[in-house]
Amino acid sequence: MTTAIRIVGLVKEFPPVARAPRTRAVDGVSLDVEPGELFFLLGPSGCGKTTLLRMIAGFIQPTGGTIAFASSPPGARCPAPDASFRDVTRMPPNRRNTGMVFQSYALWPHMTVEQNVAFGLGVRRVPTPERTARVREALDAVRMGDYARRKPTQLSGGQQQRVALARALVVRPDVLLLDEPLSNLDAKLRIELRAEIRRICKQAGLTTVYVTHDQKEALSMADRVAIMDAGRVVQLGAPADLYRRPRSRFVAEFLGETNFLDAEVLGVESGVARLRTPAGELAALIADDGARSESVRHAPASRVTLSIRPEALRLLPSSQDSGLRTHQPTLPARLLDTVYLGEIAQHTLELPGGARLKAAELNPPHARARQRPPHRRRSGRRGHHPVTACLAVLAPDSRDSNSPTVIHAKSDSSEAKRAPQRSRLL
Image (tube, rainbow, N blue to C red; front, side, top):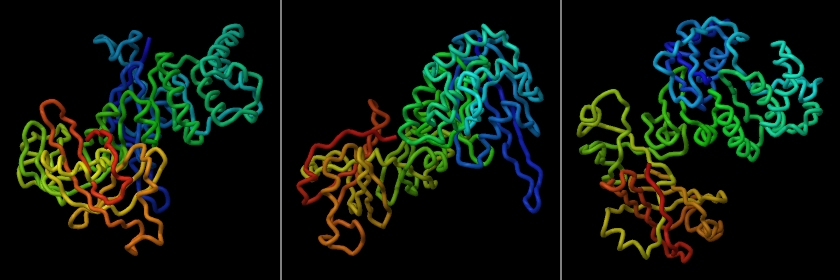
């Protein structure tokens, strides 16, 4: 059986301390977690995500609202119609059958790996033969069977994280709860363990609630993500939907780097808005907030904010300028700076009127060559090049509603004369 979670109107207030006022850490959160789902709570520090996780675990008592669990058949994506949710709001942690992986791992330093993993089974008074078999099974699942006799101090950070995960899995919890388990690891190890944790959770069929502030972690691992801010869920959905269709400026910039342009709506048709911006007249998809009708929210002359991801912009060689101009409008811009980051180069462009955009170029073979040495720069401004560029936005058509926004650059530099790579507009 797998477990569904239903949270309704959950509130947590902390009393005033000294001169600090009363704090509402979680403010009326309502959401459903489907059986077997890898569900992420994502948000900046202080947004209430860890408090919410600890209330699900039973370590913190809510001020208001309810938390309920319901069992469903394996493989079910939602509770059966007759599923009976049991209220666990006031139930102590030891009766909820949840497994928790803490940020610090909380391993006993004087115990071996297998003793740490077996601790929860001992508390539950599981017979010794069964305990031994389940510990071996849990360690094999996280690929730590060969380290059973070692102490935690003899393990790397990634190995300790695996042991903490095995300890949570060995009790066969109804719900697995993870509180930023990868935050103490180096960048390379975090990337390696993302796929490993997802594999383990899906293989075990566990309903998992995972707290993180790392956007890449959430986008690469989650089935669904709830983005939190100031104690509230501001948007909920699949990672790709959140990234491509953010409903607010906060969500757009929290999920990755983006460019913002103030715009005026000229007209809306079939979910596409024609906009007047400092970069000229552009077309963009509308993020549906589910609140008001499209015609009311985006009436002509209303003011909106346009979000353009850096990877949706491209630098093209000057040889393609004439061909591009015959198909869509272009606008002049100046290439101010290029930062080489290995797999990508980040270009800073200035549009007429002073607005600036950042463009990301994948696999830039000559990114360093585009940056003039300090003694050759013609401007005192750091990274300022005498290069003009053209911005072209491709309006969505019937075949592709996610057409790319294109940056077209003209330069006398021979390094810029190469074929462009395709990119997508969110």
